[in-house]
Image (cartoon, rainbow, N blue to C red; front, side, top):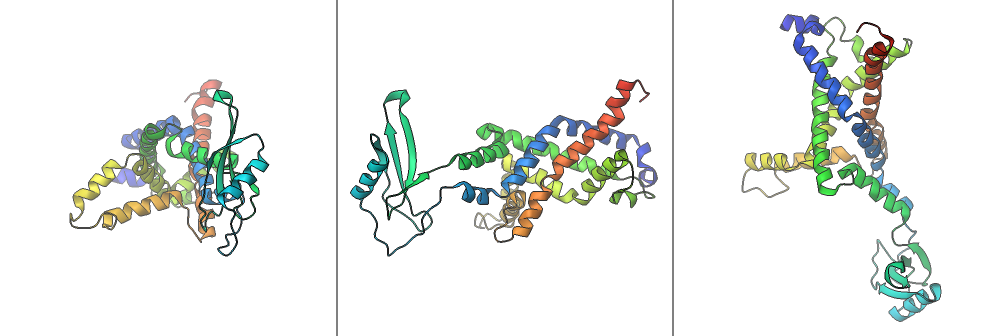
Length: 305
């Protein structure tokens, strides 16, 4: 069997069985992987998007004279005549030098409400405290993290990532073409027909980026269902070590950091992560094209399988 595996793995029944697991697991969660792939790549730039969409803040000036509480209320009432101030902040910070004010007009369910930011030095109305763009980024993060289902969705995300891990491992087994052809499976033949090109993209991306794909599968499993990982770290760790400083805790922390790829101060690395994050989507599309061409198209034309 070992000789067969090294020379012609396609003839082994176990390889064919692993291929079926790889194929149907990929088909089962393919669209889900595309969703996570695209949203994950976008969310690499979550901090930048939050800054882009946020209401512009004034520059913090510790020496500047601030409006008093009454002066600020008067500025709000001038900006919103006929509205009632229901909440007014009083403190500012270097990071957020604004005063948040809530105003309301009308009563009951038909009441109109707004949450605004005001300049603490001039009383100018700056804009919404949370913009529609910021709400969109938050919605996108919830879609990626928990599929908009809160904690239950996070668990399903973990389960889906476990399936992705299985797809990665079985894909590694399926990729091995035999000793005589393994080098050819590492590259893409650009001059070949579209079917061969599609196969080369799927095969080459899968093997070269195997560790990245496996990392996203394992880390997604951990982020969705952390208990098996934390329990394992507890079992193997010194009970006298501080939480968060144990080797296992450091590994899990890095697993989270690698998953999201929000590398502060390293824009080139962040761009690489955003680009590589699209690979699972490419793998599904190329795999689906192969399946369509080899199976569904033949069945539709009546050709023998």
